[in-house]
Image (cartoon, rainbow, N blue to C red; front, side):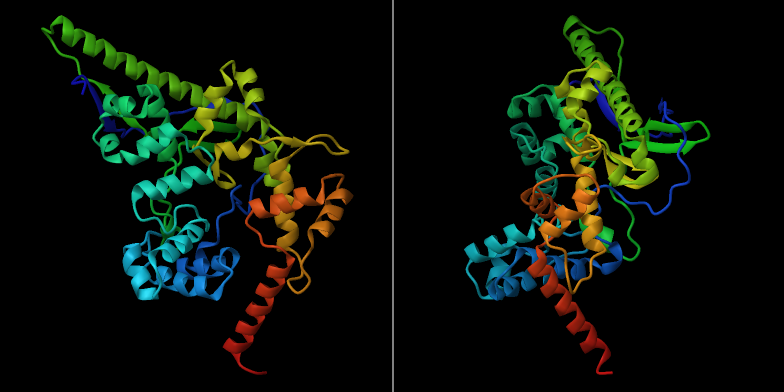
Length: 397
């Protein structure tokens, strides 16, 4: 440990950040986060039961799943060991673990976790940022909490700067995803960045109230060895500040280019790659990748991942369009469909074609599956089941 280096919670208000040079959008209503988490009002258990139909097919698996649901705590974590759940369900541990693996695919990422490490790991997998270094860090969270960065860097085979970058990424995750479904729930994951509207346009700020302050503790009458440790501590502080500057610079460029998102929502997202942001900001593409991984923004349209504003483009008659925008269109079409006559992938493809977006039917299916929306047969069966449940709850007319 370096005696001259300490992390202390910041108490200052968010620092004023850079301004994205874009026109001021009109009034924004109907906040819609890009990743579109499930509606909290449904309740955690109700939400999980509705999602189970999408990941579990057999009645045997669903029966085991009910025992997992009974052990689900308000935080979204499991409150009992899998061995106990398997015993209560009357199945072997292999079957119980197989069901758990499927349950851990349910939104929001992190539900059915058995520990903080597993909760964060599930979210890292969902965000597609789980590397060997990050996996190693998650396996050694107590060391991170104690500030043993040098030891962590050695174990994970990286430097302190990489450890700081990974820490910034997982800080944007939600350690208790189930609380989002409580009636009095509040967000447990504070945003890393704040995007706000004012009379002059859009501003992007670092949320310094969530950043631990890197404190350099100087001392008098130090020897040469102590001086070297002080110099190393100052170098770490400079590296952290440089990363904060890079984060703000990169976020501002992304917000500037995606300004229409804040006016019209996900369907207005433009194709934007890591390379384009790197060229515009003068940093390496890998730096943009590290900075954007896991960072969350508080925006006029709700909480949004910075990486969610990036994406490849699809060629259309009117020019390239963001793949995320196409996925959002597919979601909107399905949400507006007649539940008794759900849209097939072919019909969705035809509707997109009418909008000038030419993609293959298999691409529609791939995007639908990525959105975790079942096919027409399952959606029709689900609608039929809901109608039957509704009739049962209200009795014969």
